[in-house]
Length: 489
Image 1 (cartoon, rainbow, N blue to C red):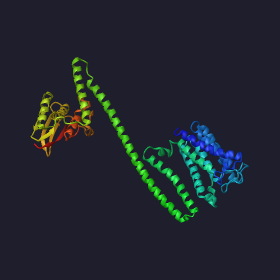
Image 2 (image 1 turned 180 degrees about the horizontal axis):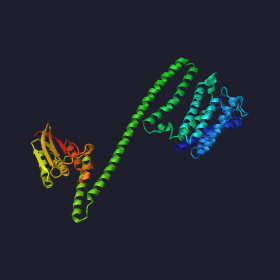
Image 3 (image 1 turned 120 degrees about the vertical axis):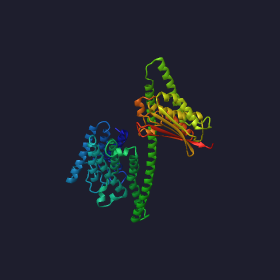
Image 4 (image 1 turned 90 degrees about the vertical axis):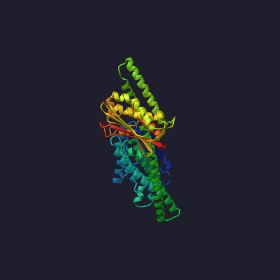
């Protein structure tokens, strides 16, 4: 059970409050019956009720059945007290010494009227807790409201005057015990009623936990200061009311700002946790994808020729993965030169010419003078080569690949377009991410780990350029456009 140690502690407080009253009554120790001196005393029957209630709550952790039986004892005390007030008889029960204060209308030997009602609520809470935790919370919170009103009345001296307020008197021991029992019952039913909201780790729970203690404690503090000021003659009732209203507004404003700051901090923390979790999930997914792809790529009959081919392919995969990792950490242009990008594109076309012809793909190239770029010739050739490799993989026999370079303002634009399988709209945003392959690639079993376009993106960004992909969808081909900044010739 959640908060079991707190439940036991709350139970112990209630038992202690009742035991003090029983000891005071048995040994006629007046100081144990009225704490502090002059406060309403704790009747013997109320003391027994507190001990029974505390013991019942303690059983909630291990023996709900025992808790219900002890709850019936508390219910019996309520019934006896109610019968006493209805008949005007105390049934000869033991009473407090005559010099111990008691609330208005309290019969000898019986709990005060408000204490009697609180005991009824406590009994309902204890008996209903195992099967109806929401009812238990509601009953216990009602008992707390009764005790809270009695505490405010005692603090402000309302129980000492005549009228209805005189019936709010309750012994301080009973008030403390009910507060502890309320806390214990709420934690014992943490999965029901209002407690999931209070315990929530999100914004709602944070707001409740910040506001609730202030809502309960603020009237006590401000009301006490007001009464103390009036008694001391610092101000009259009207001015005291005005001061209390101003102080309440100011503290409410401070509390609102504090909650807003706490919510902002919580939102940022949850955002960081979400990002970290997403990164971890992405890394795990990538690892699984790589292992799956490697297994798929290398699962072929084991003869000398295929082993040699697969070994070379695996080495290329490792080299590509290492290059992506190196570029992702920030690479440098080892040999920045003034380069005519057409030369790098021609070299890439020459390297792929035989493969393009072998697949029966029509190649159209238009390399118009477009300017000079500052960069690494080998890496610019790698950009063009990877784009051509991607186009060849996804274009079947009879298809077409188009390559062109043109001037585009202050940039040189390289376009590699094909009439291949195309790119699905939902995959287009991820086409340059490493280890990501479209459904068309996986279904058609095209070689590769999905690193070629990731390398293109990093190399283009290393040259201060940009790359984008476009496609009208699966079956409609794809186009890749690279823009590299041009320098004066």
